[in-house]
Amino acid sequence: MRGSFSYRSALLILLLGVFTYLYGLDSRFAPKNGDEYPYMHIVRMTANTGDWLPLQSEMAGLRNTKPPLIFWQGIVSTNWANQWTLFNLRWPSLFYTALTALFLFLSVRRFSGSAKTGLLAGLVWLSFFASYRYGRPFLTDPPEVFWMSLPFMALLYWGKAAFNSQLIFPVFAGLCLGFALLAKSFAYIVPASFALGLYYWRWREWSVSTTLIKDVYKLFFIAVIALGIFALWFALDPNPQAVWKEFVLGENVGKFDARSTNYFLDLVSGGDSIWMLILTSLANAGLFTFVLLSTLIQCWRNRRFLSLEESLLLLLVLAFFVVFSLPSQRSGRYLLPVMPALAALLALHWDRLPLWGFRIALLLQVILFSVLIWAGSQLHLSAFTGDTSEWVYSDGHWIFMALSLGLVILGLFKKDSSKTIALAGCFLTYCTLTSSISPLEGELGRFTPQAISQVQDKDLWVPCDYRAKDEEYRLLLPGARLHGYMAGEAGEVAQLTASYPLVLVQSPLGVKPAICDACQIIAHRIEMRARHSDEEIIEMLKGHLGKYLFVNEYLVATPVANTATLLDKKDACR
Image (cartoon, rainbow, N blue to C red; front, side, top):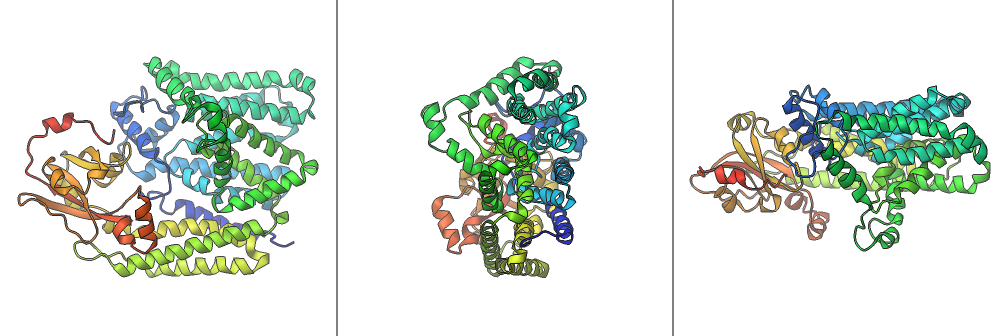
């Protein structure tokens, strides 16, 4: 059958996927969410107290932003912040992601009767950009996705035994969901319970009376166990009132407040509308967005002939979508726990899916590889010179880029291999993204050991464009006492050197900052900028990457002596 998936291809792509997820795990530029640095801050501050609770933070309103499980995980993996690296913070997330892929493989293999289909389901889920973006950094999503999806995968694996279980499965599901709530939010008991209810209802062949008699008490039991585990936070925290105010009322109930006009107008229009929820949920698949769309279209067309397992997977997606369309703040990120189910559906329909979705994926991959090759050549040829090292790629980088581009182009024309190559191309794309920024992971983007030693135990001011950005600089300049100023002022060298005794300033590439006679440049490096204006993006598309995408960052010592008043000012990183 056209586009069939062989064991040999599956194993090769599996090896590629493992490499992809490990490659650049400790990179500052790894695709992630901005929540990572605030979470790191809370871990570090809490670990410094020597106590598990209460959670600590210097950021107003962001102390009890999430339940403690993710922060306890960070405390353990960094040995109470004594081994403070991105790798130590992130490897548990990668472990959760690997477990999710493993149990997805086991459950799909069991009910489909095909190990190849099970392996394909796991690989498809790993190929989704949302899985890569949220499944590696130090975020709440990896444990949430694992614990939330595990009971549903267990129902698919054990089938009748799990559905008819009066105690063992309900206890198991309650424990799993409890850990999910303790990692993310108590609110997730609503979509989880709704989905389990639909599962039981479908298992009872849509009989309301039978479901009420045989299964409703199980849902109640599961919810009680899960909420009981979540309630441990209130029982163990010395200040439960703060947890109630900051997390329950602020972080959860506040999501029902109208975002712009009123609740019902926000539901149907604007950036938080239900339509945007649909688009962002589909976009979780990344390059496979149109493949996922074609899968859902096929499921709809064949809805009368869907197997029990296919209908259960769709009910899980439906339950989460309905529940998370209710808050006024809607995001496809809330549907991450159902992405394994969508990957399973895609794997089950793989051989029957039309090629157009895969061809779009391949075309997007060709465009991305071409852009990365063009951008890399521009940076390589511009060879940042003068007071910085040169931007240099290894020969292996160019060989890898050329082979990857050649492979996906082949996939566009070789119909029998298009699907397999499109899947491999997703992982190749993530590898090339990491490889393209690799020069900044070396000397080009780091301070020298001599510079790091000169700022030990000294107050240093750094630019901040979002909360807890100083946690990133803490990785670059360990041992310094960091304070933040607004990132928009980073180019105002005269003002900064006249205000702070030790400060990081920025200037365009090739332009050395004009500093005072008594000032001293201790070190410099290249940094990649974020949050560009529309005009700057247009200029970068014209080829001016070095001018707008990167800046020189200088560590400057000044004659400013009085820091007492400076330390009393509001920290821009907070």
